[in-house]
Length: 123
Image (cartoon, helix red, strand yellow):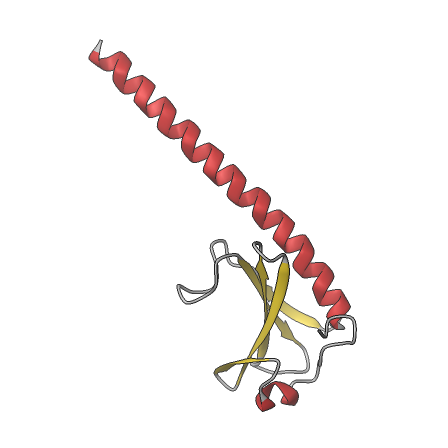
Protein backbone atom coordinates (compact mmCIF):
# COMPACT_ATOMS: atom_id res chain seq x y z
CA UNK A 1 0.00 0.00 0.00
CA UNK A 2 2.81 2.38 0.92
CA UNK A 3 4.64 1.57 -2.29
CA UNK A 4 1.52 2.30 -4.35
CA UNK A 5 1.07 5.73 -2.72
CA UNK A 6 4.71 6.54 -3.37
CA UNK A 7 4.39 5.56 -7.04
CA UNK A 8 1.26 7.71 -7.44
CA UNK A 9 3.03 10.65 -5.80
CA UNK A 10 6.07 10.24 -8.08
CA UNK A 11 3.78 9.99 -11.12
CA UNK A 12 2.00 13.21 -10.12
CA UNK A 13 5.35 14.98 -9.66
CA UNK A 14 6.55 13.79 -13.08
CA UNK A 15 3.31 14.94 -14.74
CA UNK A 16 3.44 18.38 -13.08
CA UNK A 17 7.10 18.83 -14.07
CA UNK A 18 6.35 17.77 -17.65
CA UNK A 19 3.48 20.28 -17.89
CA UNK A 20 5.61 23.13 -16.52
CA UNK A 21 8.60 22.30 -18.72
CA UNK A 22 6.35 21.87 -21.77
CA UNK A 23 4.76 25.26 -21.11
CA UNK A 24 8.19 26.84 -20.68
CA UNK A 25 9.48 25.47 -23.98
CA UNK A 26 6.32 26.46 -25.86
CA UNK A 27 6.62 30.02 -24.52
CA UNK A 28 10.32 30.01 -25.35
CA UNK A 29 9.62 28.93 -28.93
CA UNK A 30 7.01 31.67 -29.38
CA UNK A 31 9.37 34.27 -27.88
CA UNK A 32 12.26 33.18 -30.11
CA UNK A 33 10.12 33.54 -33.24
CA UNK A 34 8.97 37.02 -32.18
CA UNK A 35 12.53 38.07 -31.30
CA UNK A 36 13.86 36.78 -34.64
CA UNK A 37 11.18 38.70 -36.50
CA UNK A 38 12.00 41.83 -34.50
CA UNK A 39 15.72 41.46 -35.26
CA UNK A 40 14.93 41.39 -38.98
CA UNK A 41 12.75 44.50 -38.60
CA UNK A 42 15.52 46.12 -36.55
CA UNK A 43 17.83 45.84 -39.54
CA UNK A 44 20.37 43.19 -38.57
CA UNK A 45 20.65 40.62 -41.34
CA UNK A 46 21.62 37.00 -40.76
CA UNK A 47 24.87 37.67 -42.66
CA UNK A 48 25.83 40.36 -40.12
CA UNK A 49 25.39 38.02 -37.14
CA UNK A 50 28.56 36.42 -35.84
CA UNK A 51 27.08 34.65 -32.82
CA UNK A 52 23.71 34.24 -31.09
CA UNK A 53 23.13 33.47 -27.42
CA UNK A 54 19.69 32.29 -26.42
CA UNK A 55 19.91 31.20 -22.77
CA UNK A 56 17.55 28.51 -21.57
CA UNK A 57 16.24 30.42 -18.55
CA UNK A 58 17.21 34.09 -19.07
CA UNK A 59 20.39 36.13 -19.13
CA UNK A 60 20.77 36.85 -15.43
CA UNK A 61 18.78 37.09 -12.19
CA UNK A 62 18.48 40.83 -12.91
CA UNK A 63 16.74 40.26 -16.25
CA UNK A 64 13.06 40.91 -16.56
CA UNK A 65 10.82 37.84 -16.63
CA UNK A 66 10.65 36.44 -20.13
CA UNK A 67 13.13 35.41 -22.75
CA UNK A 68 16.08 37.18 -24.30
CA UNK A 69 18.55 36.74 -27.10
CA UNK A 70 22.06 38.17 -27.35
CA UNK A 71 23.44 39.00 -30.79
CA UNK A 72 27.10 39.55 -31.61
CA UNK A 73 27.62 41.12 -35.02
CA UNK A 74 30.72 40.96 -37.19
CA UNK A 75 31.21 44.74 -37.07
CA UNK A 76 30.75 45.49 -33.36
CA UNK A 77 33.62 43.55 -31.77
CA UNK A 78 32.88 42.50 -28.19
CA UNK A 79 29.81 44.73 -27.98
CA UNK A 80 26.48 42.95 -28.40
CA UNK A 81 22.76 43.56 -28.65
CA UNK A 82 20.21 42.15 -26.21
CA UNK A 83 16.62 41.61 -27.30
CA UNK A 84 14.25 40.73 -24.44
CA UNK A 85 10.69 39.57 -25.00
CA UNK A 86 8.11 40.73 -22.43
CA UNK A 87 5.22 38.27 -22.65
CA UNK A 88 2.85 40.30 -20.49
CA UNK A 89 3.04 43.35 -22.76
CA UNK A 90 3.84 41.35 -25.93
CA UNK A 91 6.75 43.64 -26.76
CA UNK A 92 10.48 43.42 -27.23
CA UNK A 93 12.94 45.66 -25.42
CA UNK A 94 16.35 46.36 -26.90
CA UNK A 95 19.51 46.86 -24.90
CA UNK A 96 23.16 46.60 -25.74
CA UNK A 97 26.35 45.82 -23.93
CA UNK A 98 28.79 48.50 -25.06
CA UNK A 99 32.30 48.42 -23.58
CA UNK A 100 31.00 46.36 -20.66
CA UNK A 101 28.06 48.67 -19.88
CA UNK A 102 24.49 47.54 -20.42
CA UNK A 103 22.68 50.47 -22.02
CA UNK A 104 19.25 51.18 -23.47
CA UNK A 105 18.59 52.57 -26.94
CA UNK A 106 18.37 56.09 -25.48
CA UNK A 107 21.93 56.04 -24.17
CA UNK A 108 24.70 57.83 -26.08
CA UNK A 109 26.89 54.68 -25.98
CA UNK A 110 24.22 52.85 -27.98
CA UNK A 111 24.87 55.25 -30.86
CA UNK A 112 28.41 53.85 -31.19
CA UNK A 113 27.09 50.53 -32.44
CA UNK A 114 27.00 49.99 -36.20
CA UNK A 115 23.42 48.73 -36.35
CA UNK A 116 20.92 51.35 -35.28
CA UNK A 117 17.17 50.62 -35.08
CA UNK A 118 15.15 51.00 -38.26
CA UNK A 119 11.94 53.02 -38.43
CA UNK A 120 9.94 49.77 -38.18
CA UNK A 121 10.94 49.25 -34.55
CA UNK A 122 11.17 52.79 -33.25
CA UNK A 123 8.22 53.88 -31.08
